[in-house]
Length: 244
Length: 266
Image (tube, rainbow over all chains, first blue to last red; front, side, top):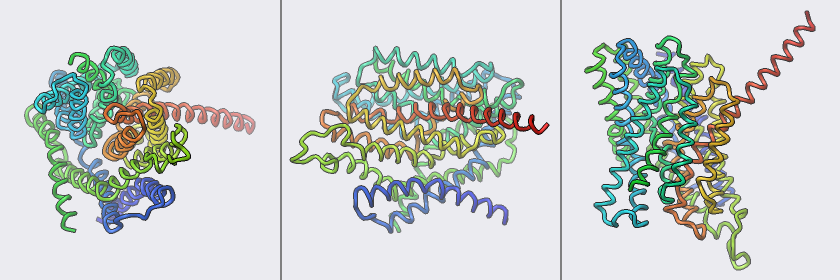
């Protein structure tokens, strides 16, 4: 127990160190640049305590739950030897975790608003809601596709850079044909799709697969799933903007 | 105190709802397809509870303590009056926004250091590379990339220059760097671009973008407010690749020196 407590304390201090820069930056700008008092200290101090405690628990849980689970599933799939089962799991993981992602819901609503103001779709709530839903489905599909492609790449041992550079070239080409008002949203959509719970799981899955499959190097083949999952939404959203 | 508890409960439910699809998929495949016992199931479930509880506390704490302040700050710093607009200065130049650029860089750096998903990837990278890649070193180089990216993104909003140009130049630099980088760092560097922008960074950075786009004359918040996240996703790739190149070069030079000195001894 005492070693568990020691471990927790170590993580707690680590979390405190991780949060220190934000606190310093905000305090510096508030007091020295904007020259205003620090408001609501009675709210800020418990809030900061929550943040540090929360980060500590998250990291503890990461090592206990998310990493081992992702790895054991990768292991089980690799031993089962069914590519179809593995790829359908990959698709569900990508699609399922993205479609309900709060950041994506917010961005999709914003995009519908822009499209309506630009006159691309009728300015009614109904058409905006449909546009937002379609956009979310498109992004979720693109992430599902990305994880499938990424897992297949790990199985085959193909280098990631061909996919990423190819994707970049596609983004650049499509940007020239896409309506100007979708570009900002499309570029941002890549960054908002990967949530805090998905990232550790997907990373553990990729690394676990690369560990289990003979001839794969976890550093070279294990990473890269997140990169693909941030690239495909840009392409799909740009295409969505062109079709709409 | 009571409203704090209520927001905790509320956030707890929201986190559970977000995580629910993941849990359904994981356990669905586990029981229907894999059909094998999960090793250490009890420990994994406890770990999941920790993650849920941790994320909830983390988000509530950020919303109580930091986000309101960060967001107000972003708006105040981009306020033309604060920037010195007055009778003797009727038009602002891009260089008058220097506090905005400094704030963008500082907040981009510090929020990235605290980003939980980046911490996760960094821990994994350190573990797999056998300590060759240090978790802290990786996070600092990512944070430097984000801070340059967000600062440049703020400059873009102020000047109204087109977003695709910046991103394309960014891509070209990444492609060139890829040719020179060690094979082992490339996938990790690409991944860091996707993980930098989540829970902590997005709200404050988005507020900065929207604040700037609504106060700089001639910008529309709907069109120009976006794009900062894209900057924050491309630049870390560059900084991580650059860090790896430098680290490799230093290691080589150190090795040459060591070999030379040991050769002399012999």
